[in-house]
Structures are given as C-alpha cells and as structure tokens.
Image 1 (tube, helix red, strand yellow):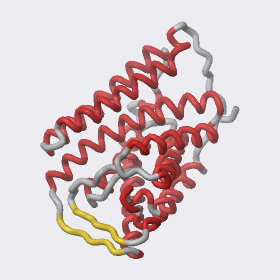
Image 2: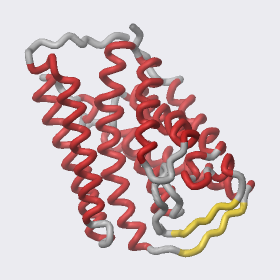
Image 3: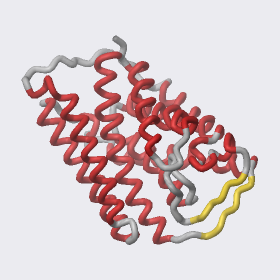
Image 4: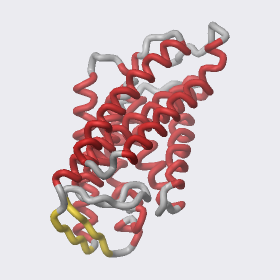
Length: 271
C-alpha cells in the first residue's frame, strides 16, 4: 500500500512545520486551560470537553487549509464506533493491568471523590485528543508517508515516550515503557483503522481509568484523587513506582495483546 505525498502548492511545502507547530499549540493551550480550572471539577470537565472538541475543529481546518485534502482520519463515519471500541480496549487493558498488579503486590484502595473523577474525565479528554492529533495525526502520519509504517511506528512511539521525561516523577524506564505500550499501541491503532477515533478513545479510557477511577499517577505526573485512592507497594518493576502503573511489567504485557491483535489487521505502508 502506498500513499501519495508530493506537495502541490507553496504552502504545502511547509506543511510539516505548520502542522507540528499548530497541533503543539493546541496541546499546550489545552494543558494551560486545564491548569486554570483544576480546582473546580465541574468546570474542569466542561473546559476539557470543550478544549477537545475545539482542537478537533482546529485540526480539521488547519489540515484542509495547509494540505488541501479531505481529513479522512476524522471522518464522521465510524466516529462513535471507533471511540467506543477504543474506550473498551483502553479501559479493559488498564483494568487487566491493575488486576495483575493487585494480585502480585500490596494494593490499598480507599474511597475518593466522584466530583474529582468528573474533573479528571475532562482533563483526560483534552489530553487524549490533543496528543493524538499531534503524535498520530501529524508525526506518525507524515513519517508513514515518507518512510513506511514500521519505522514510523518506531520513531513516533519513541518521540511520544521521550516527551514524558518532562513530567515530575519521570524515569528513563518509564518513558521507554510508555513508548512501547502507549506510543506503539496507539500508532498501531491508527495504522489499523486509518482513523484517529480509535486511538483517541483508547488513550482517553486508559488515562481516565488510571487516574479518574484508581487515582494512581499517570506517566510520572503527580497522582490525583479519583473515584478511588490507590497506594501500591512492592517492587517498582511490578508497581511502576512513582511513575505509575504504566511503568510496570504488567502494563507492557497487557498492552502487547491488543497491539498484536491490531497489527495483524493493519495494512502497512511500505517504502
């Protein structure tokens, strides 16, 4: 399978930096808005959903303007089914991770806050959407057009993982784990569907279940109170340590299952 990539206009020759800067601005703006309303859960939910919707509209407009193309990765057809399947895969995968962590380590669960859980839902919606627009909608898609699917998955996943080094409790092992279990799985989800809806739903559900439900740290960021408050005790290789469960061996193993399943259904681009 091949994808035409030759630019036709002067503007299209600069499409990559324009798209990278544009989607990075959307991500940064969404993070800034979330920080502004972080103390008000209901407002955080509404702002997060609004930021996610606004980012999708802005990405579609920017892609149409700069690339002069139909933005098929955000087609209305299959939107809800793609999001729904992604939510099921993301939530199911993290629940399986936590089940294994709980069985093999000491896990203490206490009640949290429904309101805090709702606020996290809005935050994670904006995070999932803006990160997918940047890393899968631009970085992976452009790389795939130029160097093929396999190398694009590897490079975009590594870049995705390395950005998490900016988080407060980041570790090198944690960022590499995120690159494999998160970056690769999400890139494969896009490659298998040629749509951003599935990876968006998957990304949101994984993060929301991790923080909004269990109240554990996400990718080295400080943990928040969710529906539960979870304290994990045991070897870092099993619990993920301060980075969060994503840095555990169990997360890697659980994410491998949907990754392999989706990869078997993907039509890879070769160069």
